[in-house]
Length: 220
Image 1 (spheres, rainbow, N blue to C red):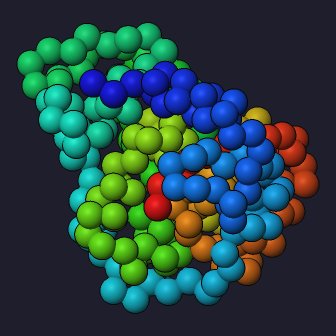
Image 2 (cartoon, rainbow, N blue to C red):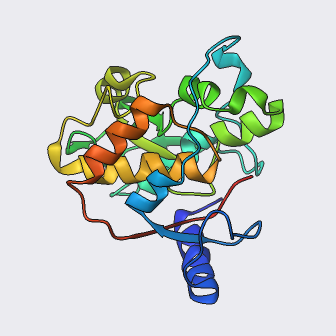
């Protein structure tokens, strides 16, 4: 079963061995270390196009490592603040989760959605329409970075829908800088573009956030 602590350990090792890098200079599989504002400045800028989009073009909640747990279950297990019991074919019961979008503790996995940080429709608009079916599946089930998927309350996820940060931000004001950073990381990790209005909104929002170092590993 995959754990996010392993991902964090590997990322820390990559940072130590490579130091500061930029998207342009990063070799495949090596970590990019930058800042939030610099990452926004280096996002490809392009108009969005939703022509041909269908959610079914992103096969999700697969069991990629064939351990009996789907991507949804892997995220629930990784993000539990109180570990649940697991029985049978990865049936989850009990446990506790914290939905950071609205600063809410959730005692039931059934009350949680797994949010794609950059929604599938937004990813399609921003470049995924040109990907292969396998690449879109990999994106929709990305366990390679802890920021790609988040267990949050269903009401927050459904309120967000397919909107970008210009249109929607988490209910909890204290979560917004984290959310912004994670949005930018996922876009950069998957080489997704941002439209001009989105870039302007990201830059404006980032001006109110700490411009600390962020690190990610390109997925493609």
